[in-house]
Length: 256
Image 1 (tube, rainbow, N blue to C red):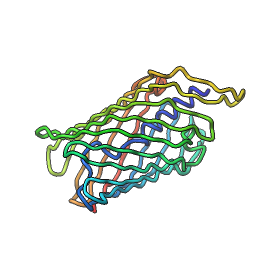
Image 2 (cartoon, rainbow, N blue to C red):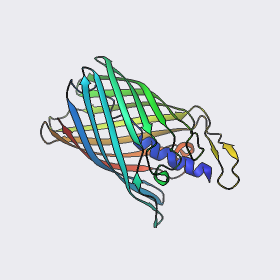
Image 3 (cartoon, rainbow, N blue to C red):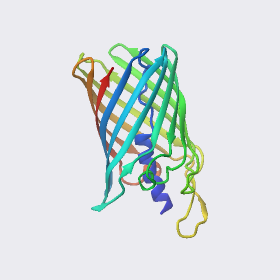
């Protein structure tokens, strides 16, 4: 049972605890707000999340951001699941070269206990990003490290490294299709307590890997408003479980 819950948690963590994007920070004193919805499904289980986010470049090359997620509903084979506030990530990115950023994201354990499952410890995601235009393709990439402390549910996920890349295709001023992939690899074993026995269990999940593939498009209405729609899915039975996880995301970006 602990293994199954840990796999379900991996999907939620992959979908929510991620950097805003893989491209250069916004210009000085420029900001962006985001409101959106994400629908995740895996086998008989599904959930709908709403989220608000904002980021702003406070001084040249230093961008600060945060997101507020809320679980609207969870459905497990026709049975209602938890709803409520999710963990709040705080994001910092610094562009130290025209093509490179460093970032640190801190995932605060503010979510409702039933909503965040085993992710009730403090999360950290840090790394470096490289981006560069190549003709009509704008390439963004990322190398990161993820960890989470033990929470009240006595679960410590294994440390992970992630490698990702995204290509945005500038086919017109109004439409920008994109495709990307993120590889997540566990480099240490997860630990937790069995609900019945209370014994500490160490999962043999070091080396488990999953790849998240996504594609979508950004539709620019005007310089202030952009609508973004995407579809993603995960591959890797050891990381995600036997059923293929999928996600549909739709959000509005407001530049200011």
